[in-house]
Image 1 (cartoon, helix red, strand yellow):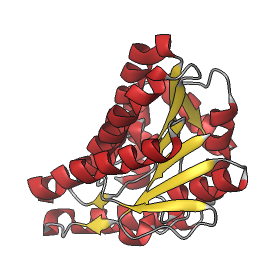
Image 2: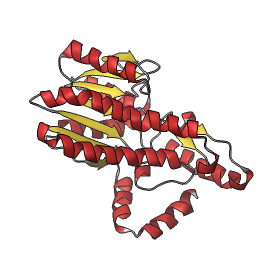
Image 3: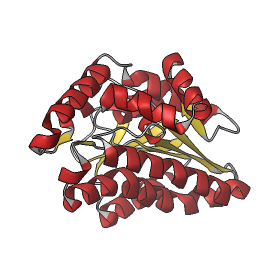
Image 4: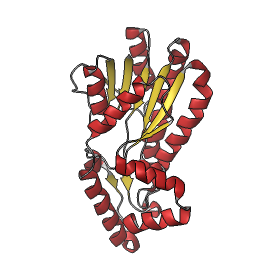
Amino acid sequence: MVIIVSGASSGIGYECAKLFASSGHKVYGLSRSGVSAQGVTGISVDVTDEAAVTAAVNRVFIAEERIDALVNAAGMGISGATECTSLKDAKYLFDVNFFGTFSLSKLVLPYMRAQTEGGRIINISSLAAVFSIPFQSFYSASKAAINSLSAAIAAEVEPFNVHLTSIMPGDIKTGFTKNRVKIEPLPEYAARVNRSVAVMEHDEQTGMPPRRIAEAALKVLNKKKPPLSVTVGAKYKLLRLLSKLLPESLAQIIIKGIYG
């Protein structure tokens, strides 16, 4: 397969690119800061730059004459009270997490539709798409939007043998934690924000290695008819099941108890 992976310089994107390459696939890694994974061709690109993203996808197709899969792993986080977050910061998060995913998906679809084998698009989402986390509202919203986008595109392109899957990890130990943008809270929020962020950071730093998500992504690529969504890890699969079974009011109480 010829595979494009965004956010390939670190975390889940890096592990995906490295694993795919070691499994015999031709991998192109997109990143602002360069890609060091062995066997991966790095392309310097910011996913918020439409012209640069277009040039990168065109470069891959010219070189390989096909694009079989795309993994959208580029992402960022913001922590802080919604009231304290600037419109500029919120828009930038959506530019990276959501519109970057949309832009790359839109660009590869014509190539995938034209191939008899079709294609695969994997979007790295989050359980935060299902359990909206206080003081991480824009991250949660962007991941929920990715799930909705994936489901809609999947229905649109099914006749062309193109399949989309959202992978929803729980807590993953990556550099995402230290790179999260922290919004200065108002005094009215400060104690709760600090407690919530401390819980988040502890859970992330004691969470699963990103390799687990890369392994799940590889399984998706190898399936003839991959599922619309995948949750990784027994604990997180249980939480996903509970999200479907619990009344919204009870789920909200649980989330507020942990992060509120």
